[in-house]
Image (tube, one colour):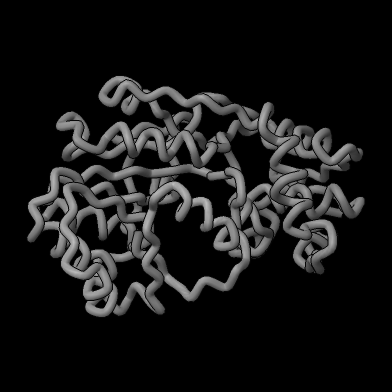
Length: 291
């Protein structure tokens, strides 16, 4: 595994000893943008498949894609993003939904132009054990401090939260599978909840009451909600994983409602989430407008 470094010993890096124990060799590179140095660090190793969970643009992906091309790999699995989908009149979003031209979308297109045996994976809202960056922290930060949890509109919009192990299992099902080549796959669970239900799950896990404040996002200045820490949508937004089920035989095994208790104790609390300083100034400005 090529990994951008250095290893600072913080989550999730402090758990990487488990990768060593599992026989995974982690090669730390100061910057994966320095592709020449990182490729040299591989020491001429050859690979049958590549999983790229780092590149965010065509410029970043091209050196590694070119290396994979020279090795004649059977699969180049690129972890992209479901955030590239444009708003749709359909609540559930299939892979055929029109995409915005983001850096990750451009990276996808480059793999196609290079005629690599690509598979695109577009995950939505990931959680998992020993996670560093956390979408769920938005809810726990407020609930554990007795602050209102701000949710757009009526809070009845459906969303999915997807376990990282389910995403990994989907990618693993694609390696060596000719049915995966040339295809895009949404990475998600089949279990849905509303934003308000998600707040309730987090409150139950923390053993505290939660106060939900709904607000009208149209009454706010553009870009304000992007600073909140959770990528809320005004309407329902969840992707369909049916294609992976049909082509790869994939089925998710995790449900956030069952996982939220251990996530709270083993991730949020264990990583000092209750003690860290949190800036609620954006929340306060939104509440003033809502009032």
